[in-house]
Amino acid sequence: MINQSTFRSSLAIGLTALAFVLSAFPAQAIPVVKNPSFEDATSPFTTPIFGSFNFEIPVGAQTQLKDWTVTGTPQAMGFLDCLVFPGDATVHVCGGGFALWKDPGLSPDGGNHIAFDGDSSIAHSIAQDIHDLIPGQLYKVSLLQAAAQLDDRTGDTTEWWDVSLGTEHHDTAVMHNLSKDIVPWNFQTLTFQVPLTSTGTETLRFLARGTPDGLPPFVLLDGISITAVPEPGTIALLGIGLLGVFVRRRSKQLA
Image 1 (tube, rainbow, N blue to C red):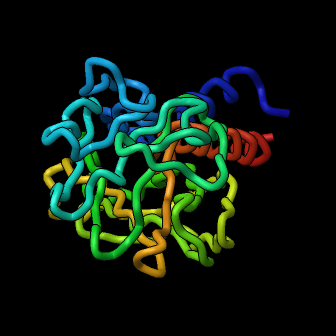
Image 2: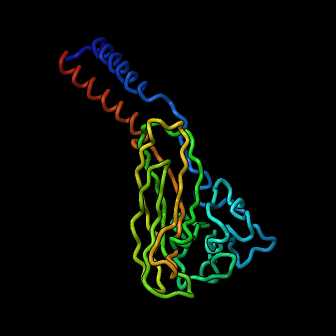
């Protein structure tokens, strides 16, 4: 059997090996999505119209949603892009007083959510810069999505989000929504690789998409997050596991 002195020596060697493994993954600031559930918001109206506010009427209203920027122009009917407060969608969605045939209800994340018109002629998006990214690293972007239709339109539609991190784009699963109906909230995860040439800051963008134009396809968003692949904790556990294997093999060799 291995004696205590030999075991301590093996353990010391193993710990040195573990330290070497972990040194290859220096401590890094963790990238985060700010205001990921759209809870930090103030209404641009003294008295909110119908409970929810939109991003284009009045001009500049998009600045009321902290940490997010909405692209698009009022001329492109941006009044259909809005933040929906809990329980509001069944009555009115957006400052213009538009309503949905059905309410998808609260997302699993709860609270507010985003509702955008996916008509290609509008092509509005919501975005923010993500910092502390590691060049070459893989990241998973997770989100909740749902689909609905305004109550002044009929006909089957499709809805999805075109998600980008930097220059890389991925689409969420396409939702097939029946006329006057909804697609319930569903969880989506997309994987992106940060370019090796990145400075560590890339724009995370969500572009509303759908078909056909004019009905319109209405796509909802909530609960956004970003995590490294693998996560730092996974790397540490891998190192500890390798240490255990090393000590066990070393013990058998010296027994």
